[in-house]
Length: 276
Image (cartoon, rainbow, N blue to C red; front, side, top):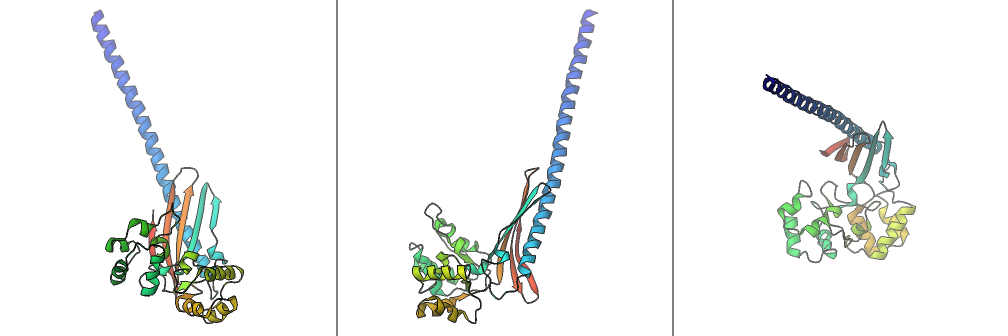
């Protein structure tokens, strides 16, 4: 009898043990499911917030009606907004600050060897022959460009092709926004001339394509360089890259959007869009 009672007791205890394990497991699974649902809802909220950031950026571009695009304008200023436990930010860069690899003259592209002399002229010929490219990262997929050349050498402070080239601009370099490295790739440019140009645009940006030659002559840049700057340069932009980030400060989730927006007679159009 005692053995039977002991066996029953052991059975009951084991049953209670397994029930408690199941209860704990169910409770844990429920908490995980609730947390995942919460994260999913917050992720959706961040995606919607990022899309709102893109709309705000496009509105800033649409409101710009000036004939020149400069670093002093509202669209060029970084935007951030914190509200409801989230941080929304965006940045806008004009694509004309870069060299269009699809349309650039061979002599302009050949100056890339000033930065990377190890790139043989034959390799640049292959780059030209393989044009046009739909996106910039098609270039190393088609032509054997060394990774350090395309992506840059950050420890050495060298910009890569990815930071210098684009496929979205109309082809002329915006002298109001181009980096010094890009300006020095324009045929005939010298470091003193590039520094003079940068100092001038910081004080008073170039205003019109029609008067660019006259504006440059007042700066003190040589006649030959003016001819080259007018040939390859401009003062405005047709395409802009927008990067948007929406970060939740409550759930540690975020959403990012990268888009390229193009100005057209009928308004702005998104010609590239990536969301993550």
